[in-house]
Image 1 (tube, one colour):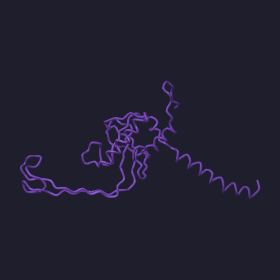
Image 2: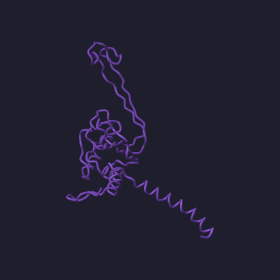
Image 3: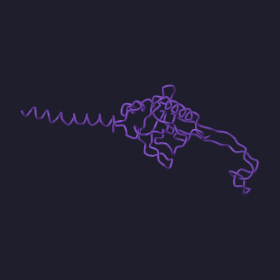
Image 4: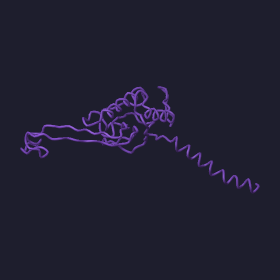
Length: 193
């Protein structure tokens, strides 16, 4: 081989290997997505019926659940400890503040006769809260644990309005990647190992 061809080969060959390795890594979808059967959906800040959950997050949970039902690949479960996968969502929001007044009075919940929150019996209290976070919608898929806790995050994406119905684009990206890596077999045919 001539010296200039050998040098060109040595310069081009590592670049080709790098491109191939990058392609393999970007199309890598964990095997658990092809094997999972049960899925639970919740928000970053809590479960669907948590009274403190932001309405936008509750709506995102419902939209992802609807998309999952239409996909028919996984079965939704109402118990997190039964889930193989836990889908976690959060609608984007820059800042949000809540304020209000409440009437406090009477004994504490344990019944020891002391006023709640240091407010005199029959008084009122101001309540304030707020949250700041990213503008983009967030979608994550974690492996479920037997103890009902979220396991290792396996898939994570974010984008503006990515959880907005009817398209729910973040969910669609996940669905397309899983269907490409692990196509569903028609009923009655065994899957290849």
